[in-house]
Length: 175
Image 1 (spheres, rainbow, N blue to C red):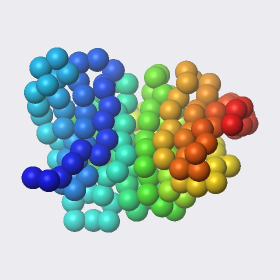
Image 2 (image 1 turned 120 degrees about the vertical axis):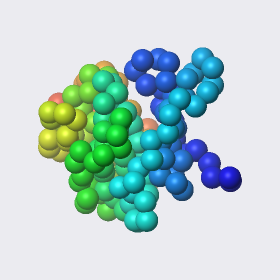
Image 3 (image 1 turned 45 degrees about the horizontal axis):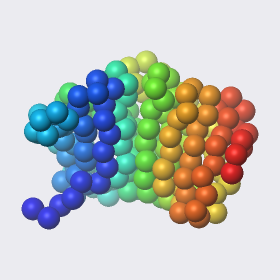
């Protein structure tokens, strides 16, 4: 139908690949061994709004999906039902390109068009409890974010830099 997949993630079970189709606000779950579609998760909460899904990440327990949106919002949904668990409508001042959880699921992070990455602590049932820190210093959009263990966050920007940050202090470790 001409609508492409925008992002993907292999889930912690090692058997399931998630992909997101932005234009129809749907997440697809695929069996990695057979390359067959297992199920679709329509995200009704995003349809017809300016909050189209862009970046996403599934929690390690595979119960919650964090979604970064075009309007700067971050929305957490139940991975089975697609129902909204929580939302941070003004998380960023621009498109949220990436959303990831740390391996333990204790932290989550976002990367945005506004040149910032943000790190959050995860509270009960997948809600984002509080922002731990805002990581600023790139000279352009922050396009990607990844955790290295539970101690460091790595950000990548369209300014052609990759930066490594300490989660405990927010200090820039490497540029």
